[in-house]
Length: 329
Image (cartoon, rainbow, N blue to C red; front, side):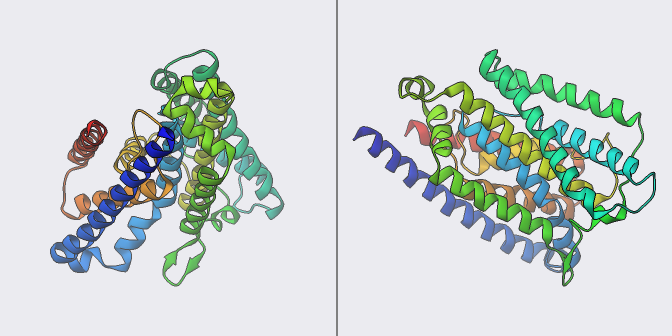
């Protein structure tokens, strides 16, 4: 009975938070309409703004799952870059350095990307679940490993990919490259169902809420944690597929740079608790939209890049303080 009351109270708080995020979104758009109307509401600006949403959004969803389980993953960009570079190099080899790639190779390359993401996630999961390393330390270490592997693979080159692969993310509806957005929304919808309707989804929340109680109730906590980080790795791999297809080449030094901070900020703003056990797909999607629009706002106002990162840091701190205040209430 007490657990039911606690669950109902958390749902009410989450619903209130989502309403708050919707109000913030409306205020953002009204403010930008007043201050930068033509520039903000132009087709070119929306194309630029929405182009990065799928990659950033998929990473955010992966980080969200980790944080609900009371963990975190700092290696997302490292995994994405390693996956992207591996795909780009393999496609160049298959195409013999040319610009054409047979469609028969598309699915195997997809499968390889998902396998790389899953194995990278499994490594994180084993370090955290089996060897009991703190998630922050484990994923910080693997982030450096994945970055080093990526740099070794490229030898400071920036490989391009054959034209056939570019169609995955560059199909247009009107003036918009809509396919990556549809991929992201479809995956978000699937994760929503998984989080609400499956045993795995319930176990993720249970592990994050109280790991001791989860163990006593018969949940294989180590298995759940391994699956969580494998899922995150696979989501990041899908983001890498979209990124490679959208950009057409990979710069190991800058690809995905800053997405870790953006993803963590989006998840926290979306209402996912740093202590675990609370979070939602809808909140994360709204948090991601808010961070994305804020990035666009800062760009349009000419704020220097380093100060933009400071603004995100302030937002994260404020969001965590608000979470703490609500938890203490």
